[in-house]
Image (cartoon, rainbow, N blue to C red; front, side):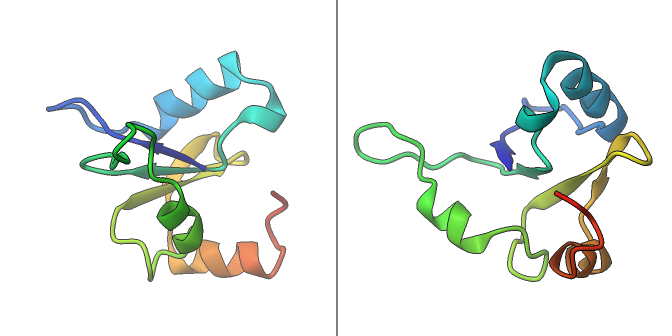
Length: 95
Protein backbone atom coordinates (compact mmCIF):
# COMPACT_ATOMS: atom_id res chain seq x y z
CA UNK A 1 0.00 0.00 0.00
CA UNK A 2 1.06 3.54 -0.71
CA UNK A 3 -0.26 6.44 1.32
CA UNK A 4 -0.14 9.75 -0.53
CA UNK A 5 -1.28 13.33 -0.22
CA UNK A 6 -2.40 15.08 -3.39
CA UNK A 7 -1.42 18.62 -4.29
CA UNK A 8 -4.14 21.21 -3.85
CA UNK A 9 -6.68 21.26 -6.67
CA UNK A 10 -5.49 17.87 -7.97
CA UNK A 11 -7.76 14.88 -8.42
CA UNK A 12 -6.73 11.24 -8.34
CA UNK A 13 -6.94 9.60 -11.77
CA UNK A 14 -6.92 5.81 -11.51
CA UNK A 15 -6.21 5.24 -15.19
CA UNK A 16 -3.25 7.63 -15.42
CA UNK A 17 -1.85 6.37 -12.13
CA UNK A 18 -2.08 2.77 -13.37
CA UNK A 19 -0.24 3.64 -16.60
CA UNK A 20 2.50 5.49 -14.69
CA UNK A 21 2.97 2.72 -12.11
CA UNK A 22 2.91 0.03 -14.81
CA UNK A 23 5.51 1.85 -16.92
CA UNK A 24 7.94 2.71 -14.12
CA UNK A 25 7.74 -0.02 -11.48
CA UNK A 26 8.33 -3.75 -11.67
CA UNK A 27 5.32 -5.91 -10.87
CA UNK A 28 6.48 -6.72 -7.33
CA UNK A 29 6.88 -3.02 -6.46
CA UNK A 30 3.48 -1.77 -7.68
CA UNK A 31 1.23 -0.71 -4.81
CA UNK A 32 -1.91 -2.84 -4.77
CA UNK A 33 -3.66 -0.20 -2.66
CA UNK A 34 -3.38 3.58 -2.69
CA UNK A 35 -4.70 5.54 0.27
CA UNK A 36 -5.21 9.26 -0.12
CA UNK A 37 -4.93 11.37 3.02
CA UNK A 38 -5.46 15.07 3.47
CA UNK A 39 -2.34 15.26 5.68
CA UNK A 40 0.50 12.86 6.37
CA UNK A 41 1.33 12.65 10.07
CA UNK A 42 4.95 12.67 11.23
CA UNK A 43 6.68 11.93 14.53
CA UNK A 44 8.72 14.39 16.58
CA UNK A 45 11.79 13.28 14.60
CA UNK A 46 10.01 13.86 11.26
CA UNK A 47 9.48 10.20 10.41
CA UNK A 48 6.20 9.15 8.86
CA UNK A 49 3.68 7.56 11.25
CA UNK A 50 3.08 4.11 9.78
CA UNK A 51 1.99 1.95 12.72
CA UNK A 52 -1.60 3.20 12.73
CA UNK A 53 -1.82 2.84 8.94
CA UNK A 54 -0.62 -0.76 9.16
CA UNK A 55 -3.08 -1.54 11.95
CA UNK A 56 -6.00 -0.13 9.95
CA UNK A 57 -5.09 -2.21 6.91
CA UNK A 58 -7.34 -1.81 3.86
CA UNK A 59 -10.82 -2.42 5.24
CA UNK A 60 -13.11 0.28 3.78
CA UNK A 61 -15.36 0.09 6.86
CA UNK A 62 -12.42 1.14 9.07
CA UNK A 63 -10.70 3.63 6.78
CA UNK A 64 -12.45 6.93 6.17
CA UNK A 65 -9.86 8.15 3.62
CA UNK A 66 -10.23 7.49 -0.08
CA UNK A 67 -8.79 4.08 -0.89
CA UNK A 68 -8.09 2.58 -4.31
CA UNK A 69 -7.32 -0.98 -5.46
CA UNK A 70 -5.09 -1.95 -8.40
CA UNK A 71 -7.35 -3.80 -10.83
CA UNK A 72 -5.12 -5.47 -13.43
CA UNK A 73 -8.09 -6.69 -15.47
CA UNK A 74 -9.51 -3.17 -15.88
CA UNK A 75 -6.01 -1.64 -16.02
CA UNK A 76 -6.73 1.11 -13.53
CA UNK A 77 -7.03 1.87 -9.84
CA UNK A 78 -10.65 1.53 -8.75
CA UNK A 79 -12.28 2.83 -5.59
CA UNK A 80 -12.10 0.19 -2.87
CA UNK A 81 -15.48 -1.28 -1.97
CA UNK A 82 -16.63 -3.77 0.62
CA UNK A 83 -17.15 -6.32 -2.19
CA UNK A 84 -13.54 -5.97 -3.33
CA UNK A 85 -12.37 -6.21 0.27
CA UNK A 86 -14.38 -9.41 0.79
CA UNK A 87 -12.99 -10.88 -2.46
CA UNK A 88 -9.43 -10.16 -1.33
CA UNK A 89 -10.13 -11.73 2.07
CA UNK A 90 -11.55 -14.84 0.37
CA UNK A 91 -8.48 -15.00 -1.93
CA UNK A 92 -10.58 -14.43 -5.06
CA UNK A 93 -8.05 -11.73 -5.97
CA UNK A 94 -4.45 -12.86 -5.91
CA UNK A 95 -2.23 -10.19 -4.35
